Figure (cartoon, rainbow, N blue to C red):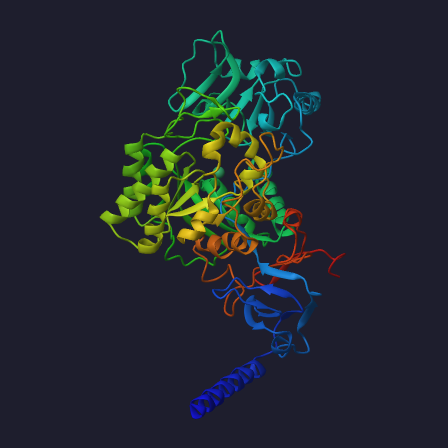
Length: 581
Ligand SMILES: [Zn+2]
């Protein structure tokens, strides 16, 4: 017994000696962060004190003493003063555009009534040329005192001549004024287009609100932003991401034009957020076939030769609509005002379900990663079952097909996710905890009390071993990842219209789990988990430093986390020089 113990002791001492020697022999690093609380998010959930980085790659993680051995004469050393350190945060679902200065922004907490909306529109109309379009984004009737849609009649009072189009915060509906409806040729005789709704008053006249595909009747008339305006918006948003400790984004539904903008930004050295882009999929089988012809020749995951900065990732599909507009595809009718029934409305698929299923098969067989927007329980079931069938017919490990939003999955859907993740490395929810807060009042009104408890079931995911990737769906909800970390724990709505926590806290998770969803699990959905997403030797140094202690902060402090330093591949892309001089 004693001898065994001695042998173990000697072996241990030898090992320690060896690792010590390796540390000592290591070359001096370019950058060393010391005296931090480093949440590495490695498999063992190690908390370290210091990190050394050379040529953008992490070369040492450990105690201050261990890592200090990598400090040489030209090493840059930053003393973190005990602050928390995490991997750079990743948004697994973000429409990576910043509204241009010409848009009316209705998506902040100061817009509380119809008057606030109309004042902002009126201010824009005052500066507009005759006939010029007034564009706006971010409105949400759930946040207005009146708690009703904006209508054409409202907008006509401030813009009788200029056409106005205001996109709802969910992007699934919007409202135009009478001038806009006239340009689009919409009258009481206009029929609803396929997979769309023209909202009408009791007399059958259009109210100005257009849902899902009906929006295009108006939006197709609006001149697009110039490439220069778009590019400015992307670069601006990258900077804002870095201020929030964010270094990665999965951008769903782009096309050639935006891809080219990303390439330009990369070439010009302005790219400070890794981009994993999904191409916009079609809404029919023939569109899917055309898309496969156009994109399948591009290098794509899982075998991508890319530098890991701008990645063509696969294809974004749509199964249904929105939980705000009550167009998402459900088994049971939607509610309204929490307890009333929206009788006869259980939403609808936005693509013929059989054509969707066949499209999944073709995309999967072409070796392309797919992520599908699915909000309603029926839509989610259809999507996971489609993945299941495609994978059974052609088992291919590691395509990591995603379920975007996955708001209220059934037990069946969760069980299929478990199986797909285990057997095929596929079937991952790409989910937005921020919705619970930002859209929560509207969501609970539409889901009703019973279904509300099933919204974003993160704890159930955890218990069953389902990994998911966190995100914001910006501009649907604000992008800072701290909101999503906080909401994963707190599950509180913005206004508390139906009580502060209408979704309950049964599905709350702790901050460490929430962090995983926004780091290593999100990196996995960008096919970058071998390069980023945790702080480990050999990984690229995407790192964020926080003013607050993430593990000891009271829940509500998470909402206001302050980032003080952000690294992308070891380069400082943001530093708060006041707090961290
Ligand atoms: Zn989206």
